[in-house]
Length: 176
Image (cartoon, rainbow, N blue to C red; front, side, top):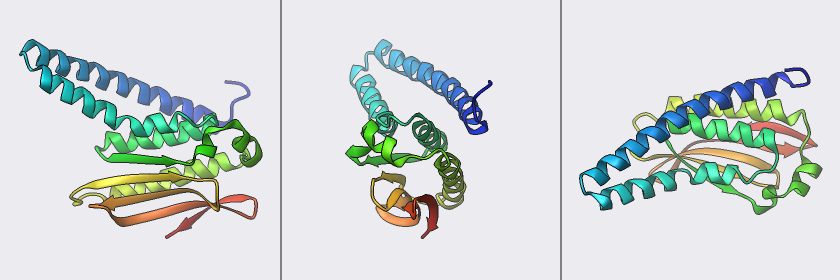
């Protein structure tokens, strides 16, 4: 793929893997719904569909980010968490949905920093969430000093958290 960075090639490969996995899961969900309907359990089919839609809100929020590399990195992060069975919530500052913000803020060198940050967070979360009663990963994306804060919560208490901050015209990690 001439003209594509190493990160772009990596993200494309990851997105294709995620697509295959989600396609498989999607077909399984349809079979469960059809099974409920064939058994005359329309209420169970509806509940199952509502739970599925509710579970996709994090991905929908990320899909509103017009900066493609950021969207791909965060979408891959969320899908990896969901594969592990973790619930994910995304809070997105409304300015991040606009191209103007990204044109003024985003720099190409941030791509590797954000990708590394999400991989580091993924490893830390996978080490810490086991044994939690109600683990939730919360992703907060903002336009201020803290660009991205990822937290692991258990029963609404922060168990672990790390931030990626915008300081001195650079994006950098700040472990907390």
